[in-house]
Image 1 (cartoon, one colour):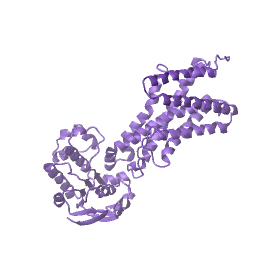
Image 2 (cartoon, chains in turn green, yellow):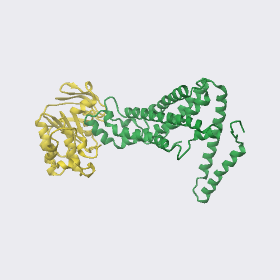
Image 3 (cartoon, chains in turn red, cyan):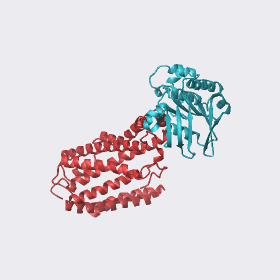
Image 4 (cartoon, one colour):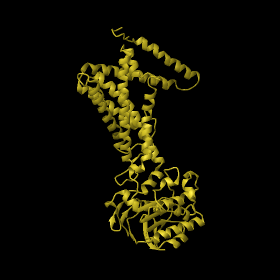
Length: 274
Length: 198
């Protein structure tokens, strides 16, 4: 036990927790759900991925180098951009499929680091990986959600409502006027999860980061302050990310002559690709 | 008034023709021959090479929305974005009269769009297309879903547009209707567009 009351876990402790998955597996076999294989692979992936990240972070934390920190941050952005694209039913054709989400995530990620870490928390040096990487990760994860949901709603609704959109365009509406209902719907959907989660935070669920800090022995009020900070960062990042991606997406679905360009979307892809 | 110069639309050979003020042109051809594609290109709803002039002004010298306020396309299956037909019109006098001329009741302007029949929706869409007096009307099967009486009312509305000096280009599968309304016809067959007499 450390001075702050932190209790380090042994590999045996982790194995005991893993035994709960065996119960899930047994239930799957008993009720013939056929989930045992998927469950085992998912549990194994989670463990290996987290352990690997643990070692990578340990290495990077020991460096305290701007290059290493930003390098890993960039990898996180690129991976998140790929995830944002993978979840779209109708992707944009060409470079934009990847570029729109990744560009937005890069912008939001930079903002989270500069504003959240650099200005508000202000560690010395500013690129201290212990602050930059977890906060970037939380901002990216939530923004990714907002972007994915926003773009998915935008493209599928634009496709479904194309007759109504084109009727407005034919009557002389600009592209943003014609797409306004669809754009609003996409923005609402993109922001819904963060609004819901802010409303429920503290009553329904104790957020993971705050729980982690409390477990590590930080004073609960101090942990709360960090959680409020990160929640505002996440909310701001998600709103900004959804806004940029949806307006960028709307612009890509129309052209300089204000025409609807659904030909810039691919045919529906498999939505469950991992 | 409307001059089309080597307009290249997907799947069709380049087409050139002129339509004078108050002139009505019918577009004929088998299904899938490109009638809708041609009308959409004239309204600048799809990218197309070539030039289109309205009263000497080329379409690319004005914005897309400004062009479409003058050159109006009405689809065979009209789209609706509001709850009631009235939400689809800008403020202005004469809407009720126009609706009545097509055999619709003014109260139907405030009904849900989904409660209107296919024919009623088509007539509402025709009113919507002509209400702000565009110079050119591109009507895609404007009476396709209408009975004989409603068709006559719609044709009267089209004639009034022509009398006011507007250009009407319409798609029709009815040779009798083409004879009744059109001054000339465009026939599309095998990707070629031929301009001829009715």
